[in-house]
Amino acid sequence: MSVILVTGASRGIGAACARELAERGNSLILHGNRNLEAAERLRDALPGGPHFTIAADLSDENAAQELFERAVEEAGAVDVLVNNAGIFEEHPPHGSFEDWKRAWDETLRVNLLAPVHLMYFAARHFHERGGGRIVNVTSRGAFRGEPTAPAYGASKAGLNSAGQSMAKALGRDGILVFTVAPGWVETDMAAEALAGEAGAAAISDTAIGRVATPEEVAQVVAFLASDAPASLTGCVIDVNGGSYLRT
Image 1 (cartoon, helix red, strand yellow):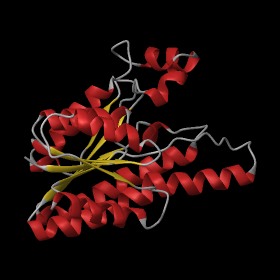
Image 2: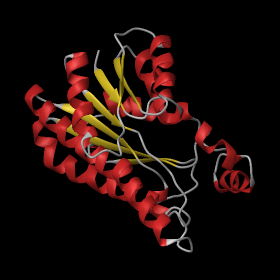
Image 3: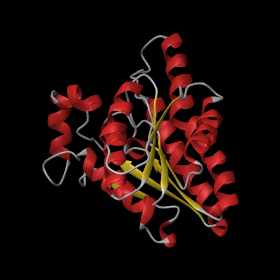
């Protein structure tokens, strides 16, 4: 059994990861912010245990350290970090400069700086324990761009790069770093967009005639969190139904 910290675990991909990881016999630390009650309901429904919930606002520059230290305090140790929490806010370049600045600032703090800082504290903890695993959840938007939310695409591209840099820096210490880059996923957050024209376009882009389910992404995350061989460290695995193929 591993102790696994999952950020953004109250719904969508994070909740699916928690369920998949718990079913595989792991102990979960579920992070939530505004939806902490949903994370608590999920915690109580998970098999096995013990499982924990911790609230943290990852837009706060001190939250990553406080979250990780509290996770260790609550569970005794952490074996795996799953950096899943993220926000998406549209801020097209023809909007106001104030909206532009605010969106960039908040998106980079939550989507890039918080997970990077969590990696830092996880690496120090894992070094003391002789190894550990980090799984970052990014996005297809890191590669193909996000024209109405450029900060989102940039933050995910930055996390791809940061994860690969950490993989090279930490591999000799037994610390493995992997990245999962989903395309459109059938979550509550994406439901409204998928119900409209964007949804039809997203489905037509795929090779399988549908977008991914949260459970499919969770299966990849769970594999990387436990069974993936060390030689996969530094990888970025696409889960987008063939909608964007990198060369």
